Length: 226
Image (cartoon, rainbow, N blue to C red; front, side):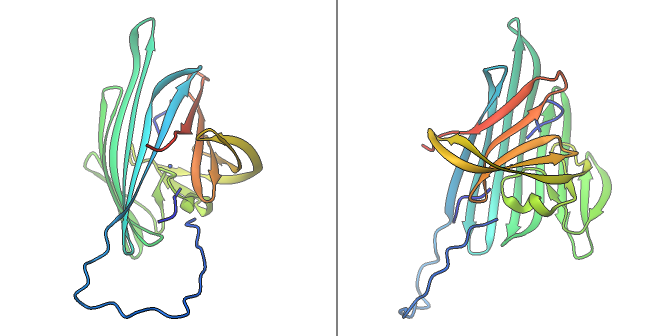
């Protein structure tokens, strides 16, 4: 699988197709073993005021058309050796091809706990947050931003608390960024409403930025694999 593309007020995640021509192909016996899942792990270091405060991790496994995405965020901000803010979030998304199917996750946002489930339906998207039901438009997806599906969205769902966020994605043009120690040309997007910036290379996020409630800049950068 090609590499695909957090949380609270302090922080809050296009498949590239390679066309090819097969001149001939052997028949696959019916008894052939099923293909193994294709797996990928993206790890982002979260920085604030020049200091690391956590990690945002995306584990992607694809088998056939089914993609499972496990998203984990852990943030801890200390001031004068005391914990000023802490966030832990863990969730799982299921996708069928490029269509979002479902999300289930739990978040502890500085002591405030949330349990959220999101399910795509034929007419709308169902959200249950801490037992409270709400309905989002058909096609709405979580704001994990792990792939380019957010680019044509006018509404995203906060996976931490189930809140629906009207958004407008603005293409800020190409910018040079350092990705895993290598200078790359990335496409920069600003997401109004979510108040987040995303830099993408070949449809995959490589950098996130958000302004915290204290006006500090929080930046998450893709780390070298392995």
